[in-house]
Amino acid sequence: MVVTRFAPSPTGYLHIGGLRTALFSYLWAKKNGGEFVLRIEDTDKARNSQEATDAILKAFEWLGLKHDGEITYQSQRDEIYTKYIKQLLDEGKAYKCYMSKEELTELRETQMAAKERTKYNGKYRDFDGTPPEGVEPVIRIKAPLTGEILVKDGVKGNVSFQAEDILDDFVIARSDGAPTYNFVVAIDDYLMGINEVIRGDDHLSNTPKQIVVYEALGFPLPKFYHVPMIHNSKGKKLSKRDGATDVMAYKEMGYTPEALLNFLVRLGWSHGDQEIFSMEEMQDLFNPKDINKSASIYNTEKLDWLNSHYIKNTPNTQLAELLLNYDLVLTSHDKKEILLDALKERAKTLKELAILTNEILITPTSYDEKAIKKAFKGEATSILNAFGTKLTTCENCHLPSDYHHIMESVVSELEIGFGKIGQPLRVALLGKMGGPGLDDVMAILGKDETMLRIANIITKLN
Ligand code: GLU
Image 1 (cartoon, rainbow, N blue to C red):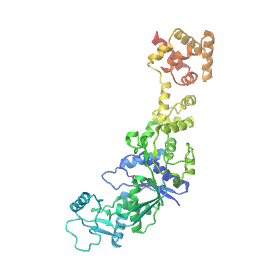
Image 2: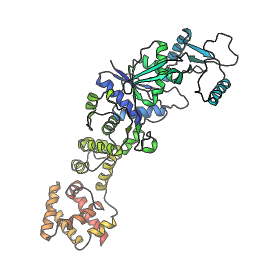
Image 3: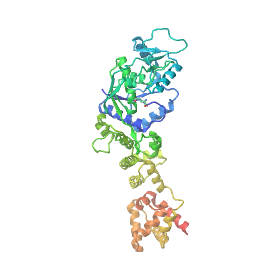
Image 4: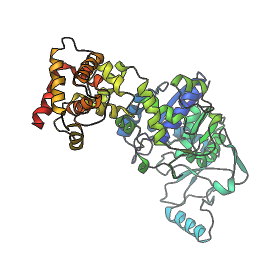
C-alpha cells in the first residue's frame, strides 16, 4: 500500500508551495488506494504555535483534502526518539560528544580561515577516556565519512552525494536531550509506514543525512520525490511579495478550492496539454514520475482563468452558498438564478461576483458624472418617464422578456433607437454605464425597485 504524508512545521500559515506538495502526496496516495497521513513537525518550541497548526488544518478543511488516520505530532513522541537514541548508543552507532561550544566555534573558525567546509572533526568518535567536566554532551551519529550517498529520486533520477562533501557526524540529540530534525523525520517516516516521500527539493540536501539515519537503524528507505520549487515570473523563488502565499488568503480573494487545486496540480506536473482537471481526474491521472525536472512558474492569469471556469460551471444554488463567505446573502433571493446567470460569466473571483451583485442589488445613491452627461442628452428624461408610465401598467412583470417588451413598445412608439432608452435607463438603475443586460437587471430588481430608481434619477436631475 502506498502511504504518503505531508509534514508541515507549524511556524506560520500553509503556503502555496507546501499545499502543492501536499496535493501531490494526497493524489498519489488516493490514486493507489493508499493513505495520505499528516504529521505536524512541532519540535521547535520557540517557533511553533498552535495557531499555525490550526491554520494549516483549516486550510485543508477548506480545500477538502482529508488526511487518513490520526494526526501525528512530533512534540508528543519524545519517548520514541529517546529509545532510538539509546539503541544507537548501545550499538556503538552513535556517541556522546563533549566538545564545548567554544571549542566548536574555534574549530569552525579555523576551517573557515583555511577555506575548508565547516564540519565536526570526529574528536569524540572513538573516545574512551574520561569525559571533561561541566559539558553536557550532544549525541552524534557515526556517519560514513567517505564514499557515495545515492538518493534515488523519482523526479530527479539518481542524485549522488559524496560523503566528504556533505556529511560529518551530525548531532542527533542536543545536550538537553532534544532530538534533531533529520533524525526524527527518518524515524517518523519509517514508523508511520510512509513509503513514498514527496516534498520540495529544498529538502534534497537533508536526504543524505536522513539516509544515514535509516541505515543506522536498519530501516528500509522510502521512495523519494523532490519537487522543484515554484518560481515567480522573474524566475526567482516565489515569495510573499509575489502575492498572497497564505492558502487562506486565496479564499478571501474569492478563489474556489477546485480552481486553486487545479492550478496547483499544473504547477510542475502535466498530462498532455490538458488544463482542466476535476479532483477525480487528478486522482486518476497524477503520477509523480511526470513531475517536471525544472521549476514551475506561478501565473496569476492562469489561476484567474481557471477560477472563472469553475465559477461559470458551478450551479447557482451552490454559488449562492459560497457567496455567503463574501457577506452576500442570496440563498433565498427569488431571482438568484437570473442574477447569477447574468453575472457568473463576468467574474474572475467569487469576491468580484459579490461586488458585481451588490452593484445591482444596492440602490445607487450617486451617479457617474460622465455617464450622466453621455446618457442624459435631449429627451432622455421624458423617455424614461414614458418607460416608467408603461411599467406601472404592467400587471405581471417578472421575466426579463416582460421588461424587454415594454422597452420595445416605448422604442417603437417614440420612434427612437434602443440606445436612447438603454443608456439613461442603465444609469438610473446602476448609477453608471456597463453591467449585464437591462432586461435581466430589471427582472432581478422587480417592478417596484425599478420604478423607484427611475424616479430617483429624475428627481435628482430636475
Ligand atoms: N517540516 C518540513 C517543512 O515544513 C517538511 C519535512 C519533509 O517534508 O520532510 O518544510
